[in-house]
Length: 218
Image (tube, rainbow, N blue to C red; front, side):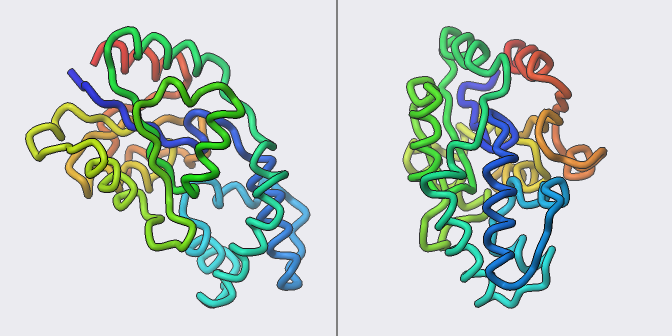
């Protein structure tokens, strides 16, 4: 049985599509790139932003860092709350908490933003620890976020068998594997078909109810 459940935020607990894609659109416009189709910007949801600006729009690293600054300009007070909690998530978290599970958020979004989102949507009280990326980009990769959570929670090597990561992108699965823990991949978010299986997710859920059933029984 898993004692600790580590949750990604974007695409796992909440649907942040509107806020993230509009902020990416805003940042790209600063570099003269117009992208009117927000659906095309969905790949930005989940992975660290710098890498995404470089991979999907060919920005050099320095430009990508500038794009992140522009992104945050809109995100910090507007895009951050263009977000919605997936139906059934609060009930699932409450049930897990009643079972005695220790719930943790491990997100590649900057930690101060994660905390503001959890507070706004009434989810903060479910989690014993919240870990996000650092604002200076020194901690953005999911493996680094998970390792920071290990450090804060005093997780030993022997305890890793009792930890499960839950996320909606390959970065969650790969980050969990790099840290020696299992991952439940969920398709309620933004993974392409087959992405989570290819990355090596131990469990797969296609709905919040399926996710809840897996977590309830493991």
